Structures are given as C-alpha cells and as structure tokens.
Image (cartoon, rainbow, N blue to C red; front, side):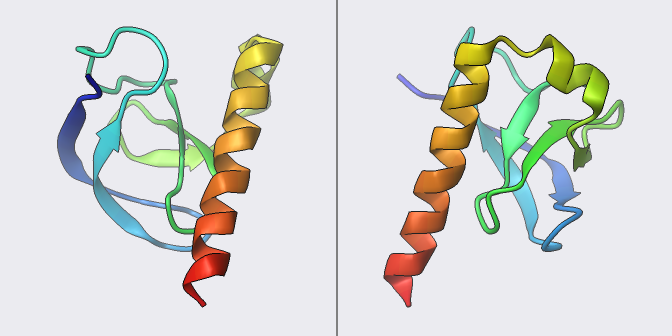
Length: 90
C-alpha cells in the first residue's frame, strides 16, 4: 500500500507549485520524507530534494552523485509521466 504524508507546504522552485502532501515510492513505505530525500514536482516534473526544514530545492550535485543509476532512471520515468499527464489535460 502506498502511503501519503501530509507536510508543511513546500514550494517548487521552478514553477512555484505549492504542495502539502508527498507519496513515498521507493524504500520503506511507512517513512515520512526527510532531508535529502528526492521528490518530483507534480506540476512541472522538476526533480527536487527536501531541505533540512522539509521545503524543497533543486537537486544538488552532491545528492545527484549519490543516487544509484536505477533510481535516476525511475525519477526520469516519473518526470516524463507527469509531463505526459499534463499534456493530455490540454
């Protein structure tokens, strides 16, 4: 079962979409987001990471360097699906 986590509002630095919920898709489903976790904006598909205060920022090079290749492929796949979803809404 996929768990959704309510959180303080975070704002995408690319499109300024505000979100207050996240869904864990990799790792332990019962674990809420924590700093350095990676997420994808549901509005513009930007790949982001949670900051210390659980806002979001663009993925840092340090984080990118430590993400396994198979997880990068999954993130890119998710980003593409989000873009397709919004394209179909128009």
